[in-house]
Length: 131
Image (cartoon, rainbow, N blue to C red):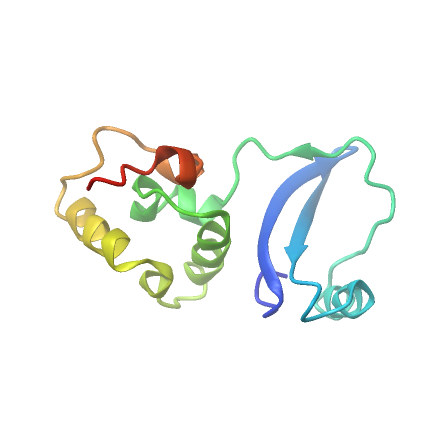
């Protein structure tokens, strides 16, 4: 789903012990009906009953196993990078110049301050704007 151009980001979760994906999209680019048709064609099931939805406590599996986990990322960046990694696309493409520089530091073994899950933090509240 995250590959559709109108999808801003996705959020993994659970409903009744079944894994689900909550989709946040730009409704000025696609209607819900069109997006649901796309999802069905991609092998997803569309559900109408969202009661009991619980967010996944371990989101973005591929991102969480990569060096990108040390960066502060927006929700859209998290989704895009998480999809890019298993498909051997260029996840660096989704970084700002400042994030790209920080990523180079991470690769050199500096800059993560011992934290392993910066990507989960809210970028707006966590970003040190004086860097």
